[in-house]
Amino acid sequence: MAGTRFALLILIFAASLGAALAAPGSAPAWGELSAAQRQVLAPLAAEWAKMDGADRQTWVEIAQRHAELTPEEQDRLARRMQAWARLSPEERTRARDQYRALRNMPAERREQLNEEWQRYQNLPPEERRRRRNQGKDE
Amino acid sequence: MSPYEEVRRARRLAACLTCAARRVDGAAADRLCAARQRALAAQCPARGRFALRWPATSATPLWKPLCAAAAVLLLSMAGDYWGSAARVGEQRDVDFALLSDDLPIDAYLDTEFKAWLEHASRS
Image (cartoon, rainbow over all chains, first blue to last red; front, side, top):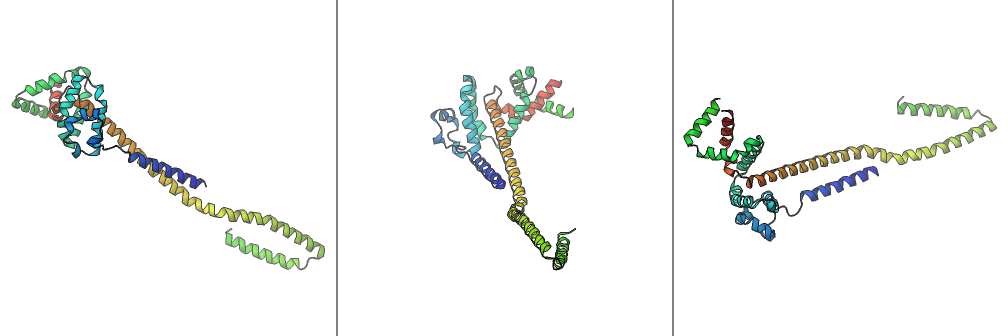
């Protein structure tokens, strides 16, 4: 009797786990999105059909959190959506890793990141190469 | 003593008692007969309980490890599922922050920028 009850408990647990794994709405079609989500995700409309379920779910969550952003950040997000969607999985992983690494810098350096990026961008290619090689030699 | 030896000894004892019983007079034979009946009556329920318990004791060793293995398997599957769900959640947080960040995506794609920053901070 105890064995049967235990087996029944395991079956119920397995069924609920299966239901959780196969949760509906993981890959909504463009037409299934709300009007507000379609408005936020408009830059991705042409690429939506090509995206896999995980990517679509990520964008749906980003659209849901869109209201948390300032108008300036919302503009940036809209401008970067297509570029991000076109990156390969490896490039996205690299960008995420670098984001984590740079965000873990001391606060005073982190605030200067934008200026540092501008300085880095303005360096002539030879100078960048020279500094890079210096860094390798050290 | 092995169960087989025990049975053999019990049979020999029973045979000796049967032979000896033929030499017992009437009153003692009646008392022996009554004692035998009481012993048999006492033995029967015990044999019945043993017969009823047998399938359960034989089923227990089969059910328990199977159920335990299934439970362990399900728990590890659930652990994997929730672990990967947590990783995906963290990744989505990073994507959201990265896409709205003041630094452009190119800064995060350029691994040499990080190396340059480290070099600049040292010099």
